[in-house]
Length: 403
Image 1: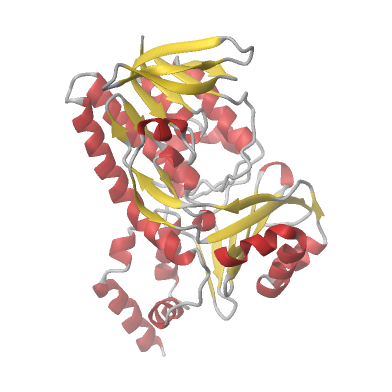
Image 2: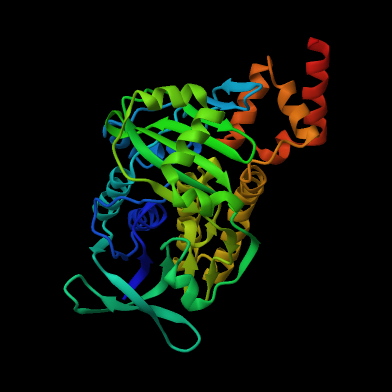
């Protein structure tokens, strides 16, 4: 019997397996993929907060050495004004990165194996095993079609937004919101980019940032009602959106070469109760949110860290495991709900409400608070503290005195 079986070996699952194995637990990490393996719905960005975890785990240098350029600069172009700066660091970690998933996931899977987790690739988990009241293990098939059946003290679903584990245990969803926008992206050569670039239009948007091997991720966004039309001819709508709302990026794209197919689509928004009798959920299996702020990897790394702490308490007998996991849910939600709500507010690319526009325009020429605003998305600044009434009044008053 294993202490933990982790289903899904990408950012959340491989990180969790690594951390539990480093604590001395017997861990099975299983995934239907074989690594290296790409992930075609990835947000790519690892914000400063996530990069800091990779640094603490001893993996950041390996990611950078994969020819993945670190970035400090970040701008949001609202067409009639620009917010450009450097998000505050986390524990001195100033850089964000945008690794390809076949690079990052492989590094994490290898780190889990090196820590002592048993990694099984090409395993298709089909069902959860149980004793009626409690999940006790998994069953499925390996890449040769042979039956796989294993037991554990806890089974963790790290298997994405369409999690088999979540479906099998009928995990409760809450804070659910409809699909708010859709994105399509691809990879370009000879399109220089050295920063996180976000362009906000009306019901449209665009973005770009450098990734491995001299390529640049360039994407466009459309509000949900337009995605079906876009899907019928992605390239035409993509190029038109760049021309309309990101002309400087469109100019670079015209001089570049597209190196891959169109990837993307709309994403739902929800939180799930992340634990029950013999099971837990982490990463996108526990929280899925719109990719417009590119939080998915940073969230996954943080939640794996929090989940490892909770499972250590429960598996070691320090406290009942359900009590430890209930505390995990509170800790996860305290971290993720503010950025979840801000992301859902931004996702439709609706025209800015007057009070929000007033606040953002008040940041022009105020570099310190511009950096802090950018830090909201980089998850290095507290969203509730930034939008607290007294802080908003301070920013507005400072802007008035400047003029």
